[in-house]
Length: 420
Image 1 (tube, rainbow, N blue to C red):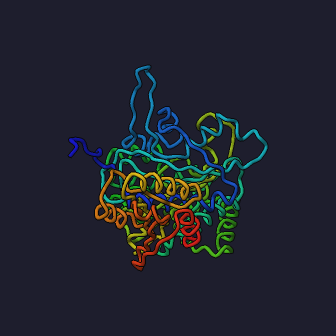
Image 2: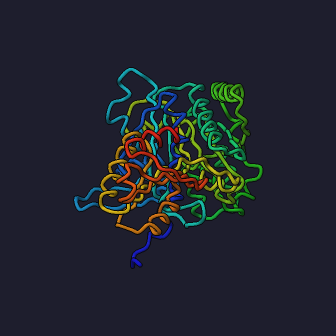
Image 3: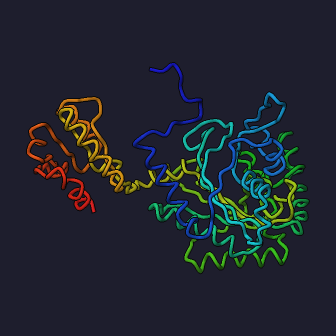
């Protein structure tokens, strides 16, 4: 046994469980690829200032959870705690917004890192699939992304998730609400750090999960009562488009995402079967983020869905994914000549797209057939010297147990036919 273990709060993805994670990533990505989103991949670490400006210096992510370090060259870097700021930085650096085809629609998949107290559904290393539509202010884009996420979850078989929806207003109406909320918060019995946060970004206090804080927030002013006419009309159109698409959602006037860059539309996907870590994904509009990190005005919207929590949600609902067999054909050679012949057949099957594996290490028949059973293969090819002398191999159906002789030169076509 190794003397090393995975760091606290992390996990290893290993077969066969890893197949479910791959299936979830593919299911989330599929509707995005069908809707004009191109794949983007960014570094696992970025300049600390990118997240301090974009995510927000008052957020727990930046103040408590970010893995920051200094390089030998003196650069201050951080492991990425979320994807949006990195994707927008990459899009701006590559001048994707200057190609004349707005919005720039991008999707991504990767690992993210936050120093949090580990528990089920909350890890220090976690996986997300995200999507961003950069450079257009249009309620249809907000609706599109919510609909695509709903489509992805339902394609996996998830049913017991809820979509929470709210509007956070814009630079015109939010300052008025901010003042009203700050005045309310100053009258509460809050600790010094929370009061300091209220002065920097009072909306973050609404996102505080502590029960004693939430109890005091009863009667707090709601942003929906302060929305300007433009924000009200925008939000109503988002609601109408989602409803027309048959997507069910819940209005949540207290919904505040944990990042500072959100404006107007904000939403969250929650699953009540996951306990305290109920959010499986979320996102919203971030019209000012580009300017925050030194770019031009580029109204944008996006989301990120947690792969880890989606897998947990599937388990909570008892959904078993229909995963493709990792191995369809397993070859068992008995002797050197059979080893050469069957290895060539396995190679040929793989070129045709058939998942095929081989008994390595010169095992005897009993041991090799155990490996064939463990592989989950539908068919096993067995051949020894006598079989080859007769120009045949033995083809065994691992489900029915039936076995028949098939010509060496016909075995590939036979398997291709049987496997469809």
